[in-house]
Image (cartoon, rainbow, N blue to C red; front, side, top):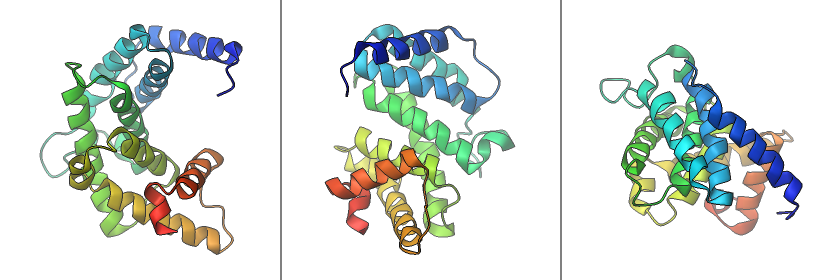
Length: 203
């Protein structure tokens, strides 16, 4: 946004550091690196960042997700099954889905994991209420950017319904004088309202 090289240099240093770090046993910790690396790949288009993001997602995030049974879509351990940590991982996979080329061989697995995770938590949000706000709304905005031309994905994962439910809650809390989101998520929400995207339908 600023076109000042020192900011990009700083982010490169962070991304280079993150790319070289070993994976850790906590799935959502690894997803922070996935998010950063995917984001800087989207800016620089340097394949080393995409490769590192995919590597960390494939080995450090996706393997912990249950793919069948009553808890399908959640992560296997109780810590990462918590809604906030779940949506931290959804945010990372959504950022990766946003920038990974359509023909990349790992894209189907990334999208499949994202779909499983969204489907289970979005359904809960719609039927039982919102359990976490900031991480969920950030993830859902990214999902809508990544799949803006894929209405089937948004419909099958109930992502638009979930975002609308979140927007109604946030709007109501604000009308009552509350500050419903942290600064980053609040900024995304206001931007969506101003631009008439996603949550803007529920003004």
